[in-house]
Image (tube, rainbow, N blue to C red; front, side, top):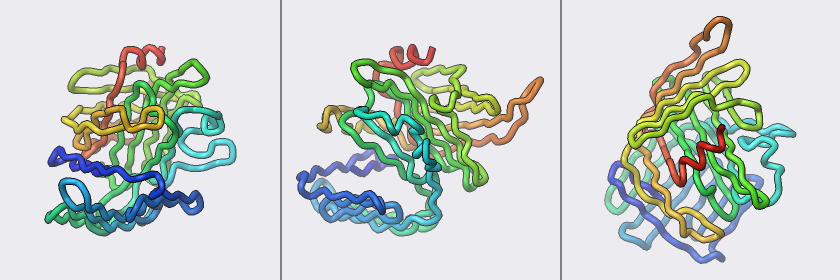
Length: 273
C-alpha cells in the first residue's frame, strides 16, 4: 500500500499468503519482490494502475527505547496476551536516501526524513486517534502519538501513547507511565490535546487536512476503512512544570503530518474521564 498524499492517490496490491515471509532478528519482511527492513525498503509492483519501484536506504535510526520491563512503545502492555493489536516504533526519525518511481514519475528521496512503525495482530481498535510528524524546524525533533479504545478479554479500555523526541532525548507521555490527558477537543477542522506527567506538560494542536481512505485490518481481513492525511500540521509545545508556573522547553510546528481520527469519538473520549 502506497499513499500519494499530494495527489490523493492510493496504490494497493494484494498478494497470496505464501508470498509473505518474516524474520524477527534482524527485523525484515518480504512480500513477493518487495522488501521491508530496518535499514532498507524495496518496492517492485507491476500490477495495478501504475508500476511502482523504490530503492530506499535508512540511516541514523532512533528507535523508541527498549528496556527489560518496558520493551518498546507499549511498555508492559506488550506482555499482555491475546490483545487484538500490538504496536511498535522502530525509528522516530532517520535519514532517507534513494528514489521512488510511480509510472513515469520519479521522486528523489536523497536527504529526506523517515519514520518507521509497525502494527501486528488481528484487528485495529474500534476507535482511535493517531498522529506523527518529524518535519520541524529543529532538525531531530519528532512527534508520534495515539489514543485508542482497546478491546481485551470481553472488555475495553482507552489507552494513549505519545512521545516527543528532541535533542537526543525522548519525552514519553503514556497510560502505563502514569501520565494524564487533562484536555482534549476535537472538531471537523482541529484537534487539541493537553497531557502531563509529574515533570512535564505537552500541548498539541493539529489542523486536520483532507485525507485518503485506506483499507485496514478487521478480524484478520482488510475489510475496515480509515481516512488518513499526510498533509496535516501539528503544533507541539513542551514545558517543564515548576511552581508557580512552567518553563518552556520546545515550541514547533510539524509539517507533512500524518493524522487519523477514526470511529466513535464520543466512546473514545469517555474512556479518558
